[in-house]
Image 1 (cartoon, rainbow, N blue to C red):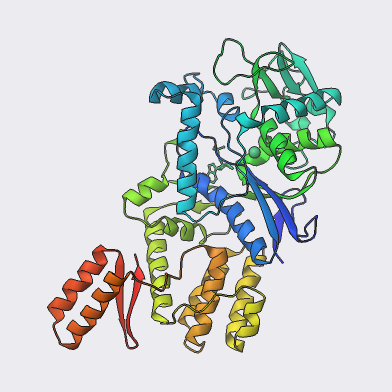
Image 2 (image 1 turned 45 degrees about the vertical axis):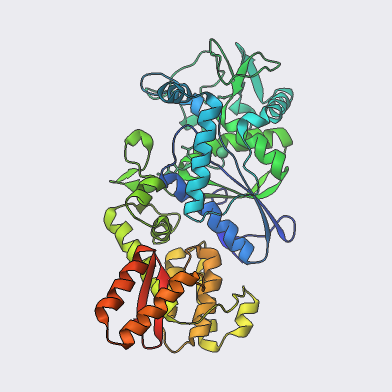
Length: 467
Ligand code: AMP
Ligand code: ZN
């Protein structure tokens, strides 16, 4: 079973489902007023891999990922002091819901392109204002929140465990030149649950405390409690979410229900570019679309993420991307050259019973690496070794790769069928080569290549892979 580092306990712990056979998992999702960059995708990929590994082990995983279409972005003010959502509206001439819809669609398209499996639910903040208001009412009732000029704040001193996730102590968080003193707050670390609308007209909602909009942190508490209940197994996000976002989420959720909610908190490190965290504000972003436009397989990016462990920073460079694309292409060629057609791919644990000894040893090493706090680099090394080991029968190698790709999601096994017209071209090329018409054969190879099919000549006959 998977062992994962828990940010809360700082230990690597075996995942033990709260309800046998089932896993509830919440992952912080995108803010939808601009395209995602591949840094965001690295964090979403962590939730996908955890989901795939637990599913591989036979668990029924219910994964929920929020779509922030209000709140977070309205908390972030740009240097010019303009609200980002409103800025996007002005720049693009679209309404708030059109902007959110446009970038939500791009989010789905981009995550699909890197084989991040769809979550069970993608709740939108704007569609859960009722749950958010109920939660705020409960926090007021339980003495964790107070109102000041129509804005509701969380009182961090009311929650004894504040700081337990990030290790930030309240005393250390004193106002200084970076922390502004806000006279409406009791403590400067207090954060907003509900923000009074003031003159603003867009994305505001009625509430018992006046017109306003929710803070960012409350959205994740409200939606995770709503979809996964008062106790659930795993919560993921990027390291930057640890504080204040997840610290505040714990204060809110546990403040409201009175007990621990999340068993395992898992945080993934950042993707860097030119030594800095990839971020729109730093101007160093790459999108999935820009990869596709440059002729790069988005799954090469997925492979690149697997070259580093999730708790380490990974550097996005052209060289690293090229190397990942080459490695991925080579893996697919090796699989195609095994020349084993369409044997059904079985999954663990049935797979082990069907394999011969040498193959079993590789399988145990692969799964052992994955279960060891997601050691993907080690698992990928096992994959390369297995494919290169001619002492393992090709059928076993193919079964292993097919099974492991349930976790890796790298499309290592092409479909076994070519459309008839392309299959006919392959046959005609074989005939041309047999007749020593090499110019004709090369011409057909180029035509196939233009259709995205690459031919590989081997002593066992012609094989092909999709490009
Ligand atoms: P945002 O839309 O800014 O709230 O970010 C969505 C998710 O992407 C959050 O979980 C962040 O932690 C994560 N994220 C943002 N930038 C990076 C990065 N450069 N590398 C990895 N994760 C990131
Ligand atoms: Zn969140």
